[in-house]
Length: 476
View 1: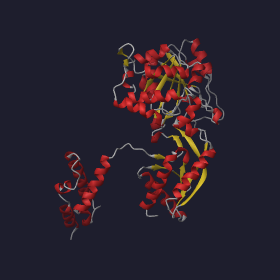
View 2: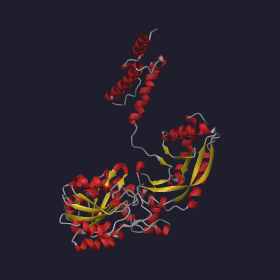
View 3: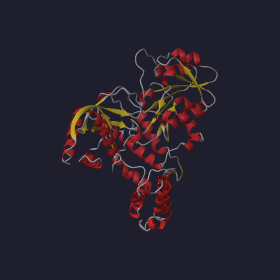
View 4: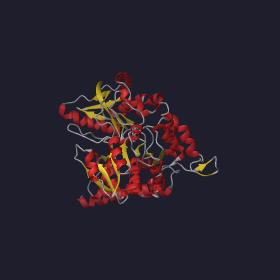
């Protein structure tokens, strides 16, 4: 039989659409089932014509129906799903950043399923402001005169500059022109705001005189950007906020600071490198400070602006504010997180991000032993398991030089040196595609499960996932 004849035979063997539809659940919308079925059949035709599908048995009604069932199951499952973070990166940008405290979800649920006083002043009986729900507590925690919350910190920087410096110059040190995740750069955000970037100094050293020489008739403000996601070491110099504020005061120019991650608690007593708190920045003289709600703060995604009332009020009146405002669930999550910060000691144990960051090495060792035992009880004998000391990371563009000593459970597959690399990659993929997905690190042909970022109640789940993954790759 010629190739052309074989292709025709294969195409004719594809089951009819109506036959496949009869095998699908009746409680799924018929239009959706029809589109999905046609898509699978189209893919089969393309595979046949391209020479990738040559086995006629793969075109039986049972086989094709199974393909459609799998696609249906995949399509009906939520795309956004929980994963287990075994990477040791606490504020993992790709995995949803900070975990919210579970105690918040009752109040968030109540707000989600009921009407609320989102923009209604109960006392006055008329329209209110959605920002009033968090403004007072933000001022309480930071010492600011006023506060505003938008949907993320890039938006906070954008609307601040668009309001205060559109068409005018903003003076920034070259060493502070940071790029954040997703290739978003401070210069690009500034350009979108309509502000004109005026770079001063060198990459590694900027003097106060550099700012002063750049000030002119078209200068709108001085800006400081905290190097939260990188560090320049060696022969360096930057201008402290207090000196920059004094310069701004002499020239009647506001000074704003983008803290990036931003945090409300001084973590130095817990062995951390100094990361300026929002209050420290304001106390040093910043007129406005912007920072994220979902990084070191440990709350939901938000961009927070705090500072002088006169400046914050101008930003609130900007029409762009409506385009970048946050929704009621974000407000509920942020308000609940901020309330926990009223007691800093409790915040360290109740806010998951802070709890994971401050976890001592000895605790990680004990947790690793518990996970190790859970894996052993599954009876997977073809896997070599152990523990090792490792380094966790803060993540989220914060404290890039901070090493968090931690402990990981290691997984190895007995194999030759040439095979080990590919086998571990196959196991990593099986864990990543499992249910639930387990996201791990690979170092020296070993899988590392850093227990700092794995919840205790997830240990038996991780063990079960490892057993299923080993079965998937045929190594049980």
